[in-house]
Image 1 (cartoon, one colour):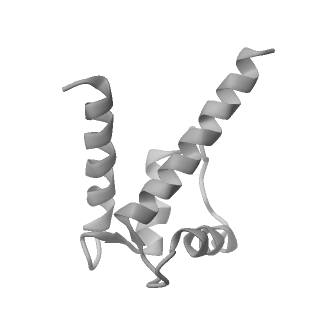
Image 2 (image 1 turned 120 degrees about the horizontal axis):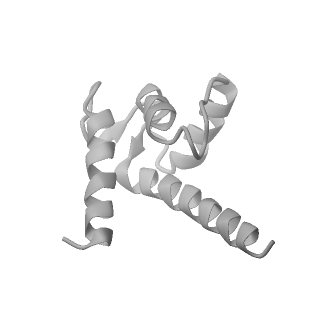
Length: 95
């Protein structure tokens, strides 16, 4: 597989690794999303300790209002984080 194909497979594997911890294995509960962020994105996002921050993030991602984060909603989050990282790196390259 190519680098990009491996990256896509990894994103899917990470999502399911956390989603299957509790309840529906196709959706992340707020606690599962928090664990995923705190364990998989620490260098980019840091640790989410504030419950209000987590509530706000879940509310913004949960477009269907089911209080869980499905894969499509998760990919919106991954896209936002990736775009922010790209913009940060581009900005620092110009300095």
